[in-house]
Length: 402
Image (cartoon, rainbow, N blue to C red; front, side):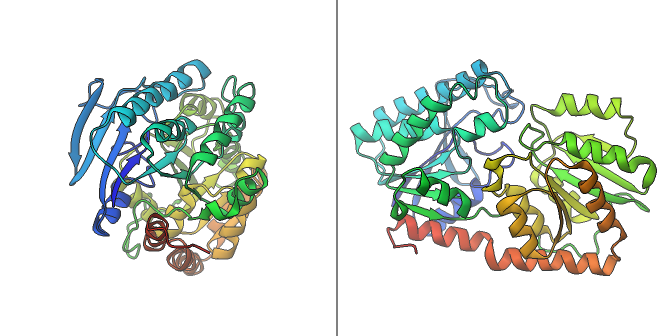
């Protein structure tokens, strides 16, 4: 099958769950895949070195054909600039889909943003290209939840766009059971929906014998987007509670995002000698950091939307085989509880999160190791890459998925 993979985000941008590894798996199964994406600028909203904006650029990355289309680089809280980012890629993608010469049998469309799905839906009316829509973030809910300026004002029109795209899609992938149930409640036919959980973008082979990040300190690591949805101000407040009580505990945040400057300012104001904020580093480097950490950290704001989603770093953390301190609710909390690898606190509660971190620090090392192994085994049984790809291939081949 000739597949067009349409996504606004792709390598070398970070935290791309369905990136090169995913595409290579589709190719290994016998499919021809062309990636159509934008010029890399996430998460800082700046064009990556080595790239220059132009209407179209073709390249090959590790044997994968990649077509890059013009967009306006931006990633901040401004509704105007973020809209320009989304709409510019929408126009480029729509034009490409309408005038392309290459024939495709099916498109696989990654959402967010919904404008990517809209391009496929509109072009499909003319070119009759069937498409699968992969929903990672539920729109318009996410825009309001993260506090993007104007997000609430856009809820209704974006909701209409989403409903149109859902109707046009031949099949829809939801990344959680909660998201699937919500879509059914919004009128999406159940037979059109399938849940395929995300996997870790890099799965370390071993964590045994890794040297500690900082000798004689208990290091807790967060790696990922420093955005509004993560609510990392709660982590800083937890660190403030711990700085005198437990000077042996060090919290490290790695990443970039719209909240990075505010978090650094807050850390300075709180005089947090027990918390460090590091720039984004590559996949291999951050996974080495994860494997050497004493514990890993995940947090999301307390919002109904995030009760039905599972942040992708949960899979990455479980695959690493380290114990986890989590401030999450809903499906993510249930999954982590089932794994046996985590101390879970309510989101937005710095006292509870600090207590969870202390509980992990006070857990004997052998018991923490067993917690990590439980998490890794849970990941392999339920969330591993091979399982997700197998279900995706069945979907693309038209095989019924219960």
